[in-house]
Length: 263
Image (cartoon, rainbow, N blue to C red):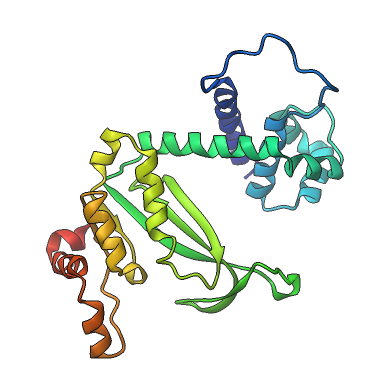
């Protein structure tokens, strides 16, 4: 596991160097920055945060491991001669410089995913992120999935056919899957260029995404089809009301074809 984390950090380090080299229309700095120099760079702190998440450890446990002899590979990957104090790491991680760098890194990863991923089929799904009740998280709520009720959050994710993540959103558990679905697909469309937009053909989801708004978005904006199993209502009257939309009617007819089932 440590070898895999080291390879990921090495790859991300190269991406962060590319991000730092992007001037984004700004003139190059002729004079060095003033003020006290920082011992720990912003990219190294962001990589440390990512390493802790990959290892599944807390910040304190990851720092303690980095101080040990076994953690020499982590110090080398981060470019640290000595390990900072926990208070320094927490203060810097909550700063605007780390937040801006994390946003720029995520955008670069998404652009690379659009270039390398197969965009003919985009898949959307949700997974539960339970939170122990003893934590008393004020932002977490009760929600339900096919596995039952739980307390916490939901992760909504859109991936390409080859498995590249293209857009995600974390919501309280009470938020239905359909609410962030259209905004997530809209993020992918906004980020793609004209050639990549032409590749968008099919969207795939489970029956929770059976919605007129999502069918309409794929037909009008993406010029494609969204495929999912029909979400049957408990009463015939409810199914009749749900089937009134023209986009849903066309999608359900396409769902019956062999091509849709293969996709």
